[in-house]
Image (tube, rainbow, N blue to C red; front, side, top):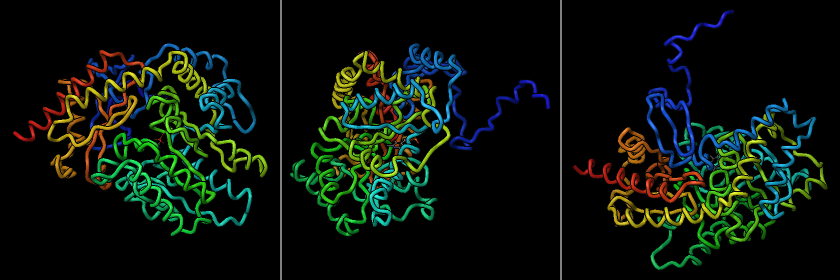
Length: 460
Ligand SMILES: Cc1ncc(COP(=O)(O)O)c(C=O)c1O
């Protein structure tokens, strides 16, 4: 059958990636911080897509690394038959990035797949030792997002994404509250007391379920899309880990969004001085150059598997592909060689300070939180009572639409549900790690202008 010639018809939308009723601007090229539309607009990407593009677009070194790997002819390999030097190098780079705290890497193609792997492997950890293990339950958190596949969505506490699929979701997942000081910390309650309250809630959940039935506790150290960059309170990760270990359960961290350097350390857990038993990472791993994610396993977990079956009862066709690894390895080498974590911390501190300077007093800005180059701004109708806008007002969407319009040409990552899973609006800023001071100023100028305009138009 002959292919049809290219006609105007080729521009008709046949894809179904998100909203069937909406038309999206077409991006035809990109370089550095900028996306270029088919209408010749230049758009500054201040959120790296979904906190993915940690080196910006079109980075010459990453493109060359992928090209070089393509020239070997080995873009794909069946990982159940073969090893690959570039995959080995990537795994070594990742383990070295944990200072040897983690022992092995399992590569997948997406964050959801990495979370599915973590869910299954953590069950297998107990099954290796006892085929009749009673450990079947997970404890996870409200206002969390761990992915859209059934297992990952089951552990997620993202109400709107879960709602239609509740009959399919795993009934062995039990949610406790998130760690969200802006809406949960009581007046006069110290951080230490707040952390103790959270650890007690986890402990109580273990006891309610029967500690011997719990596989592990799953959390994002800095909550991304579901809450808008809410970092853990210092001491929280350690306290939650201690509860897990008291009951012999696994402490599992999802660093798909907040990891790979986004918060200023390669892994968010490194700032707390603790080590998870299992962790995932994804977005900044490949920086958007290839779909790639990873599950990292601690010495303890690897030892148990080694002493048992020696294999993970799982597998995906597109895992550990050399072309994915070539891209991710180069992204990770650039982060290390160019000392970008130090830049993330410095630029991030400046970004946070400027956002607070210009927006903290705004009557509709409830909270500005984050760290590194990962900042969230939460909007409220009433600053004193923290009452959110009704969801139908669509504040975060309005802000994105104005930001992305020809007047401002910038993207922010919008989110909803930060109050109770349905109400609450926020935006996320997650620019590339190699932004300049001028870029930081530019982002702040636009964010402030957009927020002021959206709310003044609503008031007027
Ligand atoms: C914390 C977290 N976990 C898991 C996922 C799922 O990753 P993916 O969309 O690559 O499947 C996401 C995606 O946004 C995420 O933010």
